[in-house]
View (cartoon, rainbow, N blue to C red):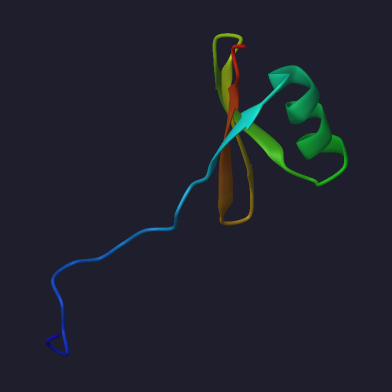
Length: 61
C-alpha cells in the first residue's frame, strides 16, 4: 500500500436493534449522558456523546 492514500474513513456508527426506542433513548440520556440528536418517527433515532453517535432502530417482531 502506498504511504499516502487518497481514501479516508470517518468514525463507524453502530445501528442497534432495540425492543423499545423510547426506553433506549431514556437510558442513553439519563444513565450514560448521551443527548438525542434526532428522531425519525417512532422507530428510529440517533443519540450521541462527544464523538460517538449511535443509531437506535426499533425491531419489529
